Length: 117
Image (cartoon, rainbow, N blue to C red):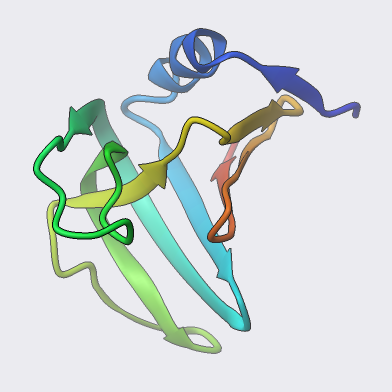
């Protein structure tokens, strides 16, 4: 499967089709990797123009649903919030290959994978 680059609009249109399905979100940031399994309910975006510093994103993707986070190999805990936030930047690259999205930011890479497709 070939990975192709998407616009934010194309990314949103494709990701919206995954509402109601189970996804895996993997964040690779520096030497850290986090994994969340989520029953995706719906998707929205936020814009924060009152940021205290550059660490807080101006734009963010919110993946809403119930889920669990992997604490270590095969051990999971409930997700502490009803949504998973991915910071978005003007330079974010959106990629897709039919079974997963990759969002590449200055901070790290987020992979959103459809499970049980």
